[in-house]
Image 1 (cartoon, rainbow, N blue to C red):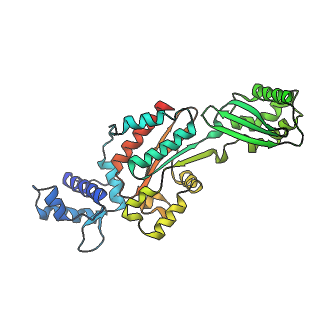
Image 2 (cartoon, one colour):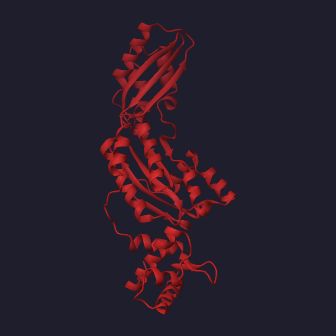
Image 3 (cartoon, rainbow, N blue to C red):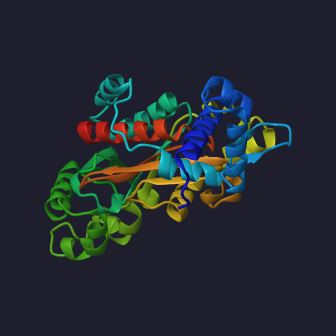
Length: 338
């Protein structure tokens, strides 16, 4: 990392934070009149010119003010933002709102994504992964018709999965109870991966092994004992990004809207982000040419049952310090209520 002197650090930090707030290129006159009364205008102009030479600031036009480059934002994030542990003003409200839905993990994660977007006024994302490692805590067979069964899987992580089986033959209630108990006896306490790998051997010596329900579950274990994609994505509304002039161009907006779907986001997280670490990608660091005007900040969260990432995505002029604080607070809250 390059080294700047104290004056350069101060003027760069002020320029970037003023641009993050206003979205308007910052002139030396603005800095002199609003921030640095004791520093001569000539000194401010020379410092800005030096920061531009170092690739941290840029001019859009000769007569305009300056704005940060991607390198300028990167230096700002790495060298000028303190690692604080402050509490957001909305902490208690977030805690109470998420506690109210904590009994249903999917509702909790969706509410978390929505509140991330609301508080940051950006695009919030929550992704949970490794569901195949989650432990099966219950399995219930529910008769929907004489030849139709719903299989309900409850996972330790809090997720519920249901499967509907259409049978060739009708099934009696007594047989259904026997099969249900055998499945409980042999499969509870195993991960979905373990069930896929061992269900045949585990059910082979049971009295219900040859029943159609058991055979269907064995022969299609890779389809039934699975959380689709092994990743689940929850997002906030995209509309809050419309407050930013960066997203007012129709073509750019349409491109981003196409990318902000669950499948595209899952692919992006897998390809560009480190799952168990904080990530801050800025502009060209985003990897995808469609995201070069964007930045993303992520934080990992989880416990032995569930792992995932929270993310906030928006224009490169993200309020990075505030976003890091929001994500740290949400990670703590999720740890307390989940």
